[in-house]
Image (cartoon, rainbow, N blue to C red; front, side, top):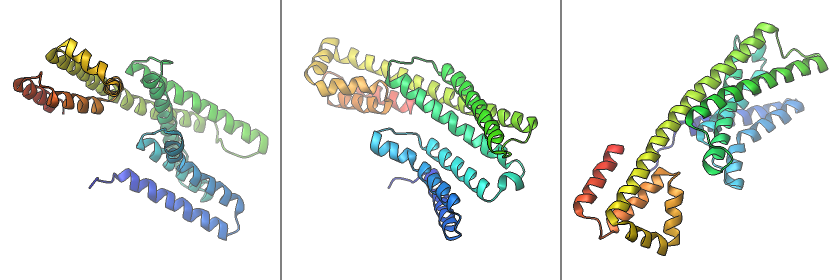
Length: 264
């Protein structure tokens, strides 16, 4: 039985809390808050909708961060936590910045690894993440300032508050960028090992025999091409080749299994 990750339970609890809050605002006749909270609930399901309707598979951590950001902003506004709870504003700002950073990294990852539009090394991902989050943070401060001028609200509490918000933006961007760089470097090492393994298998079978196998089976060839961006798929393909090929000796098969165990 597959173990359910704790993030799924957390996301579910936050969504249930938002739904309960929406029902409460409806019964109290606070229809503007009901509309706002209902929209917030919809936003938390946005990653699932993208996955179902557009074949986009965002990482689970992005799903959770979106849900957490929406939840905190909603209860912060409805229960006045922004004014009554110290540093609540900066907490929500930090989590929202993490969400923005994850959206930026996920988008860049798709462009970098699934299109020819971008070709960045892992360090490039890190720098992009920091600059992207800081840019979005500045845009948000302009929006708050504009709303305050237009409707006389108090979304900004002075220069100190704005600087702290930007500082939390920078910290969030730095945290996500470090994680992204480390993860991408690990992934790149794994892919390099996978390419070396392909070379070993080709060498063991013989280039002409390999060419014959991939040439006769178009689906097999497609799987090989796709596998260069999916180490798990590549390992499965190589397992098939190693186990089924009569051109690989038992000694070579045992060496292959030993190498796989070392990688894992």
